[in-house]
Image (cartoon, rainbow, N blue to C red; front, side, top):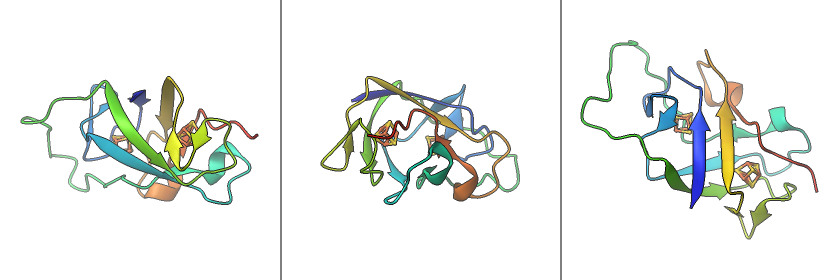
Length: 104
Ligand code: SF4
Ligand code: SF4
């Protein structure tokens, strides 16, 4: 399980700079740079009004990851102790990224 911080505050699943999902998927199968990855689980909070009233931010979660060029990727699972998902202000998944990506 990976400790995850996320500053994508307009994602439906974000609360207190953390993610409320129990598992996410990071995309970027051909990624060679950080910006070529993204959080595939991003859902836009389009009204900006949905609050995670009934959700609890998870401090650790399962991260499936397609970015196989990353040193932390093992059989499409993230094995980093902690990661950061970035993209404050993102309106679509492609505007997010795994800031912890490190090319092999
Ligand atoms: S962008 Fe991804 S990691 Fe961040 S809150 Fe949304 S689903 Fe969770
Ligand atoms: S650190 Fe690497 S393996 Fe883990 S989610 Fe980010 S890109 Fe994927």
